[in-house]
Image (cartoon, rainbow, N blue to C red; front, side, top):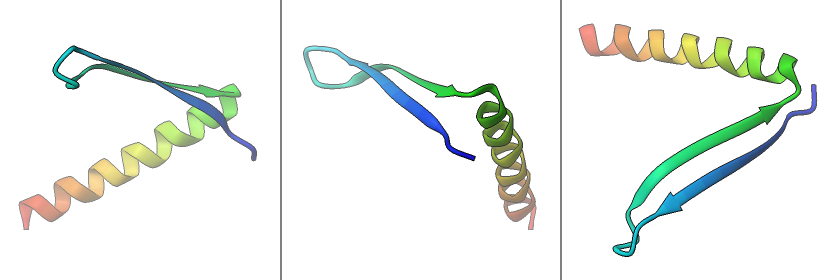
Length: 50
């Protein structure tokens, strides 16, 4: 699967990030990323509980 994406970043005068948005296409890619992120977050939670 080929994933196309772009990160949109806004920052203030102090060079601090104020907004960060990730846009991904196609829809299949978004769904695959969502599933993988859920798996990684679950692993992180399990590690923290140990």
